Amino acid sequence: WWRGELDRPLVKVVLEKDLPRVRALCQANCHEVDRPAEAVVDAIDGELSRCTFLGDAFPMVDFAAFGPGVLAALCGARLDNATGGVWFFPDKERPIEEISIRYDPENRWVRRIKEIYREGLRRWQGMVLMGMPDLGGVMDVVSTFCGAENLLMALYDAPEEVLRLCGEAQEAWFQAYWDLAAVLRENGNPGYSDWSGIYSAAPSYILQSDFAYMIGPEMFRTFVLPHIEDACQRLDNAIYHLDGVGQLVHLDMLLALPRLKAVQWVYGDGKPSAKHWMEVYQKIARAGKRNFVIGDVQEICAQLGGNAYCTVGARTREEGEALLRSLGVPV
Image (cartoon, rainbow, N blue to C red; front, side, top):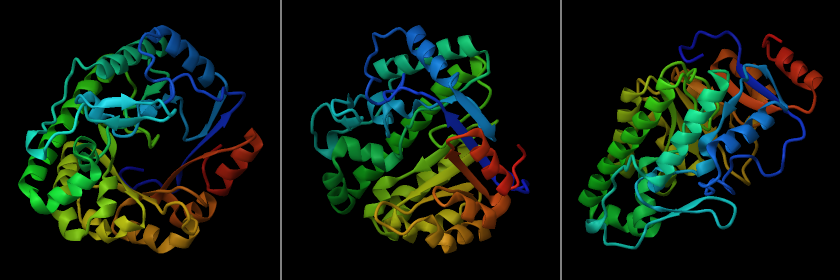
């Protein structure tokens, strides 16, 4: 699929039975660092044992439980999940000139992720894939430390400082990625994945810049695109998470990146459903990129064929297998 050689969609169907409302590892409980890693893995093992994996699905642990943009916390920001969801805040507000972003391999959250990695890999011996945490986009992490409104103003008032922080965040991003990937690789993880749930035998990631919704093409070209291009060069398989109609103005620049493999188009709440955006999916496909599809998957994947990837749930095995057959996926 990554090479564009699959003749049918890549489709993951997962059947879940009697799973608890609060999962063993989620944003509501990720702060419980005193809970032994063995107990966390025990509970996850119980959840996985109640799942059935059909089509291209496989057992994996999604480390997005530590929140979207967790790189900020790995660089010293405060992780707050008091509301049940994770948010990040700087330790204190500083002028942009005084802000510095550095990855700390001894950070409490780094240590926690690694200990769960090691225990899970010891337990499952390569039968379950451990995913990468949701590190977030470079500008999104910078926005955590600066504040979104302050960062928007700084794009005009202090662009050189914004570029400095983006460079620091990019370097911290890859320091975190390779540090965590080394633990996975050394302990027998069977490949790479992230919150997208897609498998890759080689280093991969779903890249993003949700902050880019608020800026125009010229600022995107200056402050965001170079870091996306650099990440595509460093990773074997990269997807871009194109979130919201405000990012469509950046699509042409992204499609021009030779090493970007795929795009996930997210049309957003309150907008027409996925099937109404067929021209976006087709534009991505014409550029030689694959599509990570959400919503209306039968209709869209039937049109895109081997260009498409999606993950869907089903209530019964019969329902899941019928969906797979309708898309030409072996059952």
